[in-house]
Image (cartoon, rainbow, N blue to C red):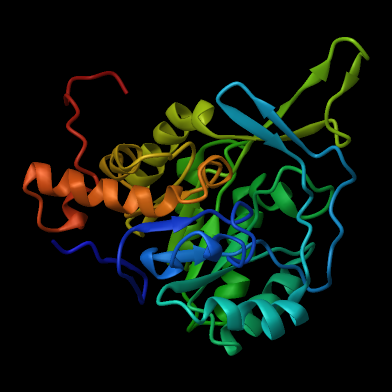
Amino acid sequence: MNTAVQIGKLRLKNPVMVASGTFGYGEEYAEFYDLGLLGAVVMKGISLKPREGNPPPRVYETPCGMLNAIGLQNVGLKEFIAKKLPFIRKFDTAAIANVLGNTPEEYVKLTMAMHEAGIDAVELNVSCPNVKKGGVAFCADNRVLGRLVDKVRRAVPEVVLIVKLSPNTGSIAASALACQEAGADAVSLVNTFTGMAIDAHTRRPVLANVTGGLSGPAIKPIALRMVWEAARAVKIPVIGMGGISTGLDAVEFMLAGASAVAVGTANFITPGAAPLVVRGIEEYMRQKGISEVGQLTGGLLVDDNADH
């Protein structure tokens, strides 16, 4: 079986990666399994300077998922390149940096620095709902989103550029198309949905930030629909995520049009979730007699007369 997939110029040994913000920089999870089993590791979002994130409490378990309002806490660009990137380079897996900024210029600086440091791909985080500056604001207007992607692409034409899209704006298909037209190599979706939790006894929000991002199995049906819509709108690869816990979950996203998938919240529940997803995809391929994993992408059978 051939499980390799292509994301721009980047070839992955298999279509499974881990979602940014759910895997740290890989150090803790490396105690559980060989990270080389994965197609790629997408590391925690990085800003130019270190960030402390939002005050606690900032994580809350919900039925079939979780709310988080971490606020993009991270070590900053300098420490990431000096200490975090060398660690992940020990493993036979692609290293993808997730970067975030308050201005297009900051995204350019981060992307340029990551490319010079030898990162395999850069994912632009333009979709975090838990910060007051930057974040989802870049996804709110597709013209603004397109200008951001275009600016980064022109500044660093060689980098494999992925854009992580928000489900909290208008048409996900239109956002994906804006990224494609601006020169992105791929789009990844979805990031978390804005939600909240309330303590009825204290009459106060559970999270200090009041709202947070909802992830986990609860969002899977909506994420699947959005991946399907985005994949129908663009020709560049779509990386699907949102409630993936098993190989069959991943197959569903690929049938909806995803070329690759990312495991997120499941990493908190089962540290070895991502390699289990890899094995699950392989087992599905064996059962169905599929020799190329790319044959799954866009393989959804839909009645042409169905009302979409």
